[in-house]
Amino acid sequence: MKTKAIIIALALLPAATASADNLKIEVPVEHSWWWNAPETPEITVNVTDTVGNQSPSTLRVALAPDLDKNNPVIVLTQEVSPAKGKTQKLKFSFPTLQPGFYSCTVSDGANPGKQFWIGYEPQNVVSLPDSQPDIDAFWQKANEELARVPVEYKLTEIAEKSGKKRKIYQVDVLSLGGDTIKGYIALPVKKGKYPVQIYYNGYGAEPWMMGADDRPDWIELNIFARGQGLDKPVNKYGDWIQYGLDNPDNYYYRGAFMDCVRALDFVETLPQADTANIFAEGGSQGGAFTLAAAALDPKKRLRAIAPYIPFLSDYPHYFTIVDWPAWPVKNKAAELGMSPEQMYRNLSYFDIKNLARRIEAPVLMGVGLQDPTCPPHINFSSFNLINSDKEFVIYPECGHTVMYDDWNPRREAFFNKHSAK
Image (cartoon, rainbow, N blue to C red; front, side):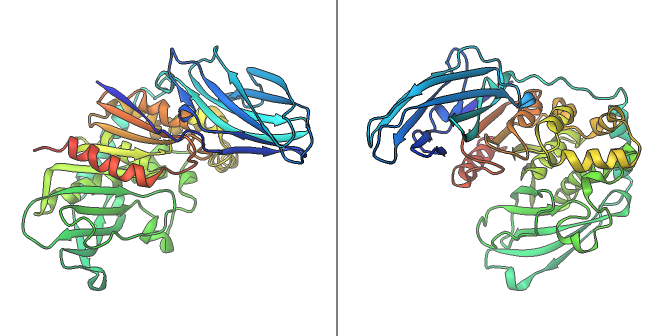
């Protein structure tokens, strides 16, 4: 198993800025705001006078771990007094950090300042699996149930969206429990065998359609899990992450994860599909679906995968760091009379961290360092347990997204590198 890290060079961008009455404070992006040993984490703070008077003040820099944001482990202060109309550059080093992600707050006197995230040795973030003893049997049963459902589907051409090189269809596929999952597929017109890229959907994402002739040498499938995407108008599950929380056999993500496997069953039946070259990508919930498909597919049909800002991992830590989706799940558990222990036990069956070691496909993961929804901690808690070849790229200024101008060609190159020739 080989792990590769990619550093995005975005040095000296004033991403974190705070303005006091007389001072402007900027923290440029250096070293992508994450480091590996033996590197020493260090930030630069630029303090500029804004009113034409010398402005003495006390600058405070505080670092707090993501799992305990209210208790800084490092607090540094320095007196600043930039000359009239000038900028004073300060360096702050943190030589004693443990692996993890930290909230960094730079403030000036009464000004609350700006908060941003930094990381240290992300590959050494440890979050041990907490799976139940019967997790293998649980997912074997789900796969057996899915296998008894015939791979029935309907293709309906969307003529006004089709092109000269590919035709666009709506696809309806029968899945676990009799649910029908829907999506869009682009099929090349010219006869032959084509690699397949599956896009799994984000949480509640609106339906979108690929361009007919954007990638004429690929089959592209944009598939939506039950009750989402094209099925949102008739969604019977309500808020998906809450549905069936008190019973793992009835929990929403049992069916949704099997929908991800059913998408593979479907593309395998297509006469145009090069079944040795099936790839998958998704962001947020789609990132979790991508990882789940690779983990739970008994045939291991995915050649390589590219999840980014992945969701649904390391629930006990996840719900400590974020407000959403923690509060709706906790509220639902309380409404159902579940203890926190029961809630986390049920969720453990659907925790990507607990499925990660099943993944055999090469993995490229994209991370938004400033992500408030799927923070880096939960991305790496599962990524670090994957045993296949893997790479990650951290986008230091991105929240719940990646830099698509960088990500899309990087993903394309990754899939081409791992294709079966």
